[in-house]
Length: 155
Image 1 (cartoon, rainbow, N blue to C red):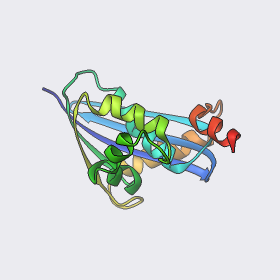
Image 2: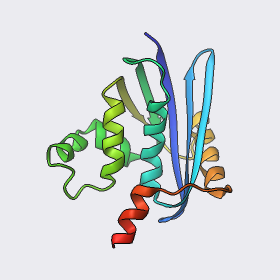
Image 3: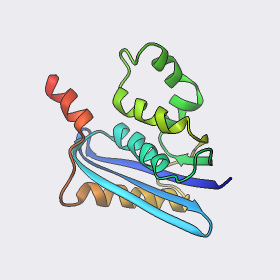
């Protein structure tokens, strides 16, 4: 079974504001980079979306995955089990339920562990993800973060 190392990062220029995510997937000899920008979102949403997109890009069910993220929000929510408590309560009062449900659908198809890394430090691939995320947020043709904009419109 393949082993994949994933680095992810999210960015928001203003919070909320324009945002983007960056992903680096490594399964030697293969390397893939992914990114996209959004016109209105939050940093936490981009951090979580990066993980969702990365896991959705995997080709084989049951892949052993290590995800490196500088987001305490994402890492702690999964590793400390908070997410599973939110799920049991139907995501009542949880932030970003649309993305957490998306995450759980793909998370459960693989063997995933998270490692928190300090952002903007010496982790080369995490820094690359940051570059991808920031560039995407500054890009043209930004996408709509439907989950965020629909919630924001309701107040």
